[in-house]
Image (cartoon, rainbow, N blue to C red; front, side):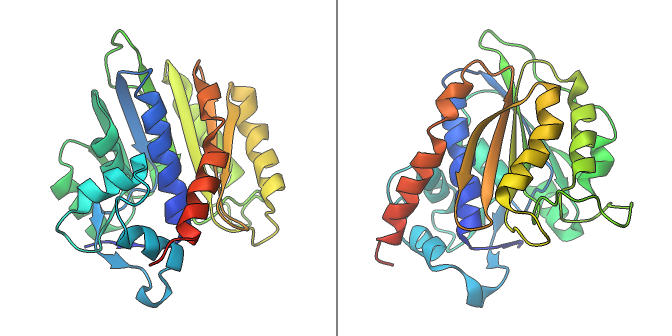
Length: 271
């Protein structure tokens, strides 16, 4: 089975995702979920077993813990299967109430096979996500009474605000400004409410958080997106949520404080 990091970055990314889904469920019927960095639906192995962070282990060992949307979904997904960890798509399927379409991009062949086996209903692009985004993205769902939401997730190693010296960025785990320009072009044909979640895990290489945020704003804001929330875990780690055509985006403003408070309880928890 696939691997997971087992760190506070996992907590930040997926706590935020699950809270977004919880809010969206109140307003939207259908979900078009697109993941540029999918992983195995249930990953059994920490990438480095000797470096699983204590905060992650505390949450994993005390499910459903604080009874958050995230912890309840995690608990239901892994019951009886040991210390495995769900993917974003698994969380989406567990939490979402209505019709849901999945487009998952995965660069690792064995992981792609696990997705193909466990999520046969998903559209799977095996290879670099940029190849799929060269073609226009569409919302494959009908537009029901309550409308539909397109939610796009980017979970690279980090966002690098500098142009890559080598122009060929296919297969690279970082996210670059050129990549976001490609995303904006691919989304031109997507109608209705759209959210982007961009998570980054390092400030290395001259990428302080405020400069990263400014770089992403320069690309997304002229294309109709506004920054709805910035959730931070520790130095270098943050998850940014951008919204376009989302008339309930103000309800996401509480995510940063919500995560900080939740993580504070985790830090005081006994393992």
